Image (cartoon, rainbow, N blue to C red; front, top):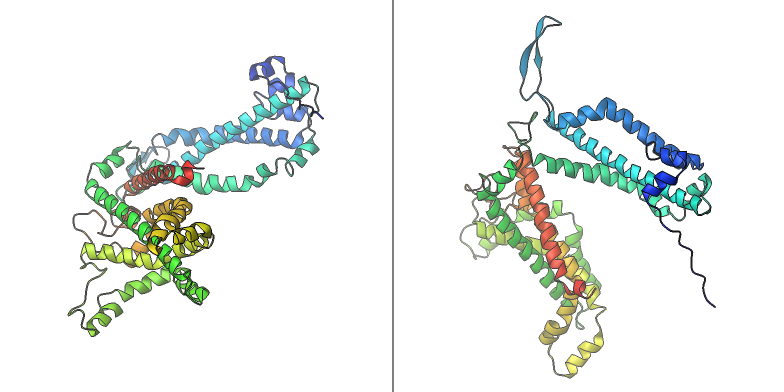
Length: 452
């Protein structure tokens, strides 16, 4: 039997909707929800109408002034004493609070974009109802519209609260932070500040912070590569060792290593910092074994930068290897045994099998995860902050130590003595750009992407 083709209604342009539509349809181009109300879609119509009314009232009484003052971030930049002719006395005017002005200004822009989106939704709904009426089809009633929110449009209903959360707790703070990068917001301008364009970017890339940014960026990339590669490689080897046929009580050995990962990093890293201290247990053990004659500075301010960096990489291996071990174990247990058996019959040894069969297949599956780990290591605040605090400090750096990453340097610039909030915002933007570019380039070169 031949299936009957589903009838597809011809589309209509908005010009046609405006010229041939009825009065309610035409009004919907000005008054949102008019067409929905005329077709007895009460909930949709009232929601759109109330949104427009509330926006207009807000825009007239607050929005215009909020957006206009955003251009200057406040007219008063310093405390002033002026004469009030009405009272006949001198009064002190405090500087404008540029932080609140910027925050409410960004929120006002987001609200304007939101009402534009609702206006587009209103026009699409109007055009949809016009096409149904033009072609003599059934226009959904109010009850049918509400039922569709729990049926065919359930996804839209469920996404409302998450989208609002993303809007107010992700998009708004992100835009606010990005905006700070184009101001002179710092300790000297903590209350009132002004727009300065790309001056803060120039300070970080070519100005007084450039001598710190590029060395810290280089160490951040070295750290991210070393931390990702070591935990992955040794995690795979550990998984292969535990999965070997001669190893008994495999679950016990996995549990032992997982405990290291299960303990909160706040606890384990602080304990490790005490262990590696100049007067800590490690130095005492080495001296009692007569392996060293005096304590070694591993992670304090008197440590060698090279020693401190190697130390944090080794400690990160201790924390990160169990994660790679668990993921690798799952992959190893599902590897095709026929290829391995065929390689053994052909005379391949364990190293050759690992190099040609096991490792490539693990890498193929884990490549996207490795990219994620790499980006996570670029932003690995816990290991550096809790273990070394950036030590040893470098006199050539501005607010950073030899083991500081970009993210910990950002923290120092924000909460340190200088409090250069605009430079911190610039660093946040640059970290995002670096992470996004590296992850996109790396992911597009993975076999998982090419064969996907």
